[in-house]
Length: 187
Ligand SMILES: Cc1cn([C@H]2C[C@H](O)[C@@H](COP(=O)(O)OP(=O)(O)O[C@H]3O[C@H](C)C(=O)[C@H](O)[C@H]3O)O2)c(=O)[nH]c1=O
Image 1 (cartoon, protein in one colour):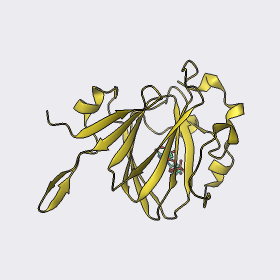
Image 2: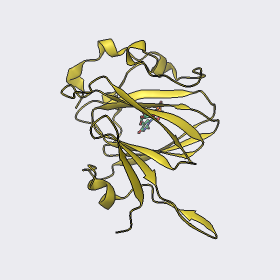
Image 3: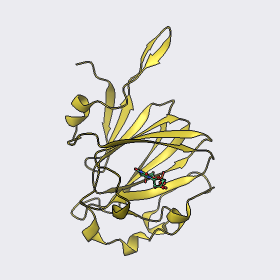
């Protein structure tokens, strides 16, 4: 099988940096956004439940940090297909030796980067350019009643957002701090 992705492990077990390997020709290029065969070998264990797109107009905007509580905890493959972001995943797995730690990576259309995020992580990003487009592959359906999150600007998390935070949703501004995170709600 021709590999369609370059995989890089991160310091947070199970969290993988996945770079698309576009196949170029005179017309342009073709890249796979998801591959059940290649990614199940790396830990993607569920059928694809939902694929979402988000567009972010303004550089500096922060979305997240979000996760879904069990039984709707989900894996996500988060890809940037337009513009550039700093993507962040926070380990909320109570038994994890890296509990409370985060990993950040610049993802962009240019570097064809994505993060494969296991269950038990909160996810968010900051737009580093205007007009960012993200594609999310989810292993669980959206469940509003299971939606939860942590304040992306919580100093306890020490996330070094590269730009001044230009815009957040009212919901994200009201998210609780990590100190009030209830371990019983993560996978
Ligand atoms: C996630 C989701 C949301 N929605 C509705 C709920 C809201 O009415 C609207 C926008 O949702 P939200 O403000 O949660 O969108 P983001 O702030 O971009 O959140 C997303 O981006 C962060 C960084 C993530 O990691 C999550 O995948 C996801 O929560 O779409 C749906 O209808 N289906 C869905 O699957």
